[in-house]
Length: 141
Image (cartoon, rainbow, N blue to C red):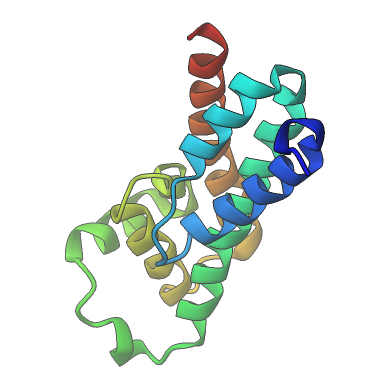
């Protein structure tokens, strides 16, 4: 099957890639989004939504896993990340898209037992903005 004739395969791959990229596994969901939009620009809205949703769910899985750990388990977490979260609360998770630091923020938010819904909303906002910028770049390229 030709990838170009089956955009749903590209969208499924984008969702999976964006989910995995938000966990501790390495991933390049931005590159997949960029390539998909270069090949199928008509998938813009669906692609950005799926990438944002997948990446947010991946970040929330890290949040959930950290929430299950006892307090001593994350004692080595960077004091800088804890400071950000204590100061800004769930709104700090708009930076959850950042490489390496984003995973630590998601874990710290779970460990600090910050409420799930505000964390997911702020995280989704930051990740959605990042994917929107990638999409704009792909269409302008």
